[in-house]
Length: 443
Image (cartoon, rainbow, N blue to C red; front, side):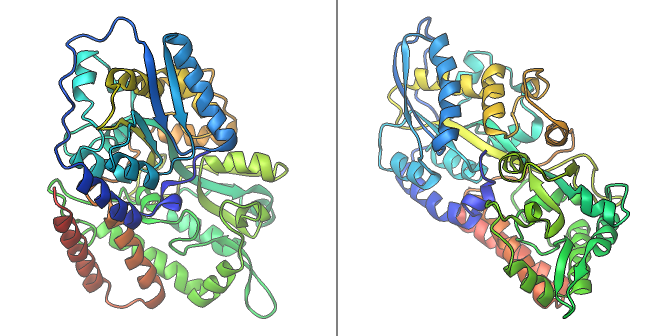
């Protein structure tokens, strides 16, 4: 399974390494002139750089095997274990890379605007590729200001996960659908030691605990980030203010210091001692990949999944936040037709998407793959499939600095949950900080 984007490379880090690409590839995002018709027969060797390793690299190999079988004249030279920083440096230095697969939608803005990845529109139009099989939110995060330089290759989504025995012991029979229900259930599930410290936590409300982030909480209020000209609307949003206030009140009711002390003693998110897997946290927002971790590390845990609870009157219950892997043709590709054929196969072939989804346990980015009878799903994974296909499922817009505004927002929220203060004034400053950074990053 791919790890969530924000856990591998923060938006701030993306912005830093993204500058490298912009410096090295500044001649625009248009592809070289392409043939008016696609080649009748494909022959040669094409390179694929991706970040997977070990067992997961084997899953990618199986998908590539399908491409090579369909195109017997083509050999794919795979470079596994190439993270985003390596990919960006290699493209910037002019190495011969054909197709690059990234785990970060945050790179799309910098890669499209700088020309690090070629504009795919000429290929899409020439081959009459129908993108309607790709959900709208996914189509959104694979392009930047009208330039489509990437296509998707699986996604991560988030939903609520609950420990069924703990809920049953507390007499909770219905999973929470609203934030008020979530808080009430969480307080009921929270237990304390004799010294007043937390023993078991119903739900950890701290921002940046595991997958608690502005992105994954945005569907709670249908939260918006930037307007059409890239100006931050977070600070003037009544919905974001209500959510931040709800979260701060939740933190204060339990106690910030108690929550921090409890959290500091919990296991790592992607280790076997994850707090949900050990039963120390009864409910949490998490990704579809957790179902694979549980099957491997805690197969006896009885748990259930449900859509993320929403603030009544604001959020769209059943929706989620979606982001994921993206792939493109590197500017310096010496085999662009082969690269396009491979990219098109991995991104738009239903069988390829099902193969990747079944092996990696991430979410396919084709509706036909989500609905395929060959996609292996159980009751808990089905929740993630359903929210991924929801019409109100959302993402966050890209910017030239790698969507660094999300990191800025997270830091603001972390400070506010600890110190409080004049929220209106701090939100005004947040907008100003984001807008200044976006202006410096350029178009």
